[in-house]
Every structure is written in C-alpha cells, then in structure tokens.
Length: 67
Image 1: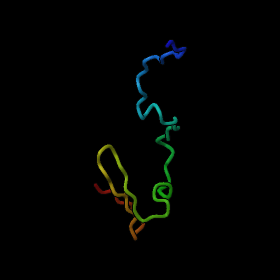
Image 2 (image 1 turned 30 degrees about the horizontal axis):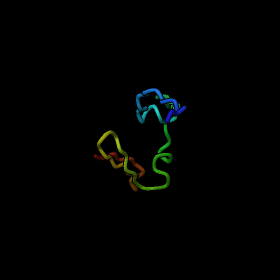
Image 3 (image 1 turned 90 degrees about the horizontal axis):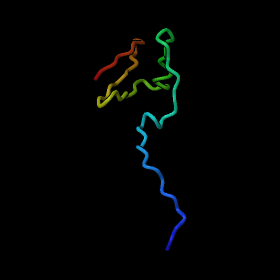
Image 4 (image 1 turned 60 degrees about the horizontal axis):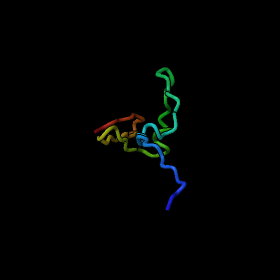
C-alpha cells in the first residue's frame, strides 16, 4: 500500500530555555520589591540551580537569606 504521508524532517528538540517565553530583564538600577517575592508570607524557598535557599522576613523587618 502506498501512502501520501510525508515524513517530518529531523529536528533537534528545543531546550527548556528555548520553550519558555522571553521575559524582560530587570535592570540593576530597578529594585525588585520584596513583597513580589514573599507574596504575604514570612518566608519563601528559592531554588537556584540544584540548591534551595530560604528567604525570611524577620520581626525586625530584615531579610535573611540562608542555604
């Protein structure tokens, strides 16, 4: 049986970075508000590579980042 199906070209799969939508870079002069990171919480976990960090907002209104 003869088929009219055309095979797709071999294409390299896209990396995760290529599949994510482009995000505008935050300029170093433009501070990021801590409320954006904390979202009303007293602490959040942040993944950086294969490490997990904890960002805490203390009762003295300080931010502490620990590994």
